[in-house]
Length: 111
Length: 115
Image (cartoon, helix red, strand yellow):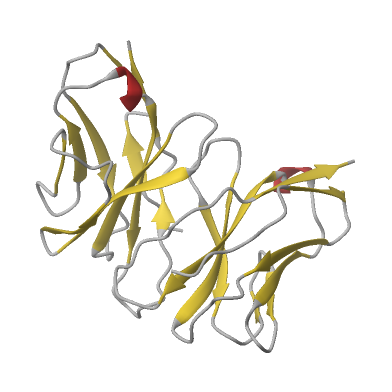
């Protein structure tokens, strides 16, 4: 699976949009981009994933660049409860394939 | 929303003892996983399981570890003779067979403390 690069930490003001970047310059055509988060040692929580099109769900939006070498996770109105470690993971599209976690980005939402 | 449940939430055991960590995956899921996270470190893959067989395992998953799906709902991780370095959070996950991009869904973990 391709490697990802994320900033170690970011701050965001409560109520503002949080934009979390991820670089995955070696991504292959059959690899998806997944975002998970982990709140204080709870289990990783699935947020969103995509292949090449932008995706949106009730939690977040995922913007993938046209060349697929980077992506941005957007939390439109961050709250204090969004403070967590956010993981960007590239995963080969294959039944039952594992996820490989990196260090992620610590997002601190401040009031 | 269906979720993965893990029991117990916290397990304390003495070095050398056997422990079994239990997981109930989401009911229509067919792929199962165990991960661990040592305090302050990354979430690490241990093993994946499908159709009553191990699909893939990491270097961490040595002969001390085993997995089993003893019935139609549970998925267990056994550590035969625990060591101090086995102290960690253990997360179970499952995914459904739908399409190759189906996400993994994780439980909230069992904190294993080996004394």
